[in-house]
Length: 226
Image 1 (cartoon, rainbow, N blue to C red):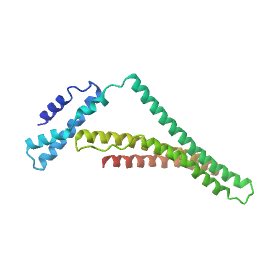
Image 2 (cartoon, rainbow, N blue to C red; image 1 turned 180 degrees about the vertical axis):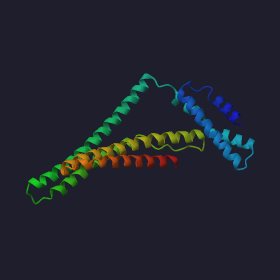
Image 3 (cartoon, rainbow, N blue to C red; image 1 turned 90 degrees about the horizontal axis):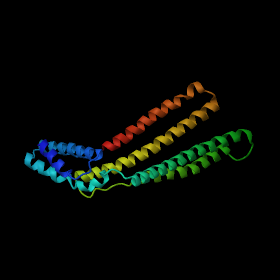
Image 4 (cartoon, helix red, strand yellow; image 1 turned 90 degrees about the vertical axis):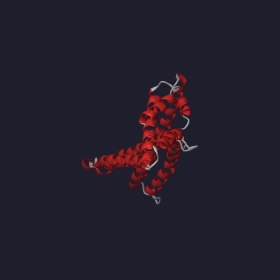
């Protein structure tokens, strides 16, 4: 029966672009179809009905062919410009996070040298929070560039489109979170090190950051598996 499913997909992809992405999609659909077929058989469905069910569940793969074509030079240029734009936004956001922490440290140092009734450390903290609103909004915008795709029907093709959309969005959010986390880790390392001169111990911050990155990656991985 696996051979029949393979032959059916070969027929569906007969007019598909002859690209690596098309081949990978075909293999992915075949693996999903075989898995679905085996599940139906285990649940007592006859081989004939199971085969028909799987075939009907694949959907219209021709809708995906446009996205499988090799990108033209113009498309590549537009994609590169979009990536550069998002990278610039992320860079500015990280810079603002660094600036906000610098403001906090500056006001804390001024409190030791300037006698004033104003609570400078608290003021620095409040300013840091206000400044951090801007880069946070910027990162939210970056993550919203990949909107959630809603399936139009329960087919393999629609499931693939939904997975692809969520995968892009998840990677964008994950990258932003990890970038901010490492930025904070580096700032904490230098701030604590210069304040305490305990260079022999502050390197532990990087070990904590590595563990935090592993946890973040695990959380996103578990989310993808749901």
